[in-house]
Amino acid sequence: MHPPCPTCNAKQVVYRGYRYNRKTRKRLRLCTACGRKFTPDDGFFRMRFSPKEITKAVALYKKGFSLAEVKVRMEQDDVKVSRWTILRWSRKYHLRKGV
Ligand SMILES: [Zn+2]
Image 1 (cartoon, rainbow, N blue to C red):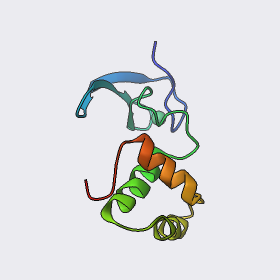
Image 2: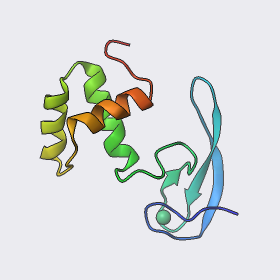
Image 3: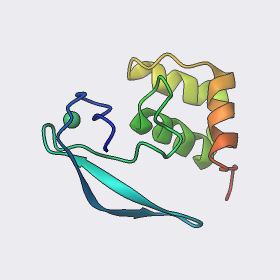
Image 4: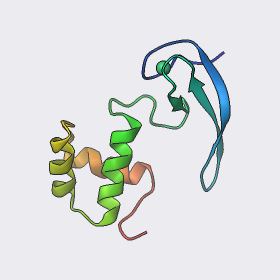
């Protein structure tokens, strides 16, 4: 039983390969309604922000931008996020500056 697509909520979801990271392999699911790939169990799923937004914020922070700078850049994309949230993301996803 697949969970519905997090983007369009459609139930037409199929398995489509795997996503690998350092420690784990996760099954990727593909929504055949909107074409989006997702992994419902990857920790992003229950958050209010999209994985794309979280990934971008963490990537900026990792590049060496300060939390305040990341916040400003996210706001330019209409993403309202607190510095604390960015910090939490960077810890949660085990990314540190300069790694
Ligand atoms: Zn969809």
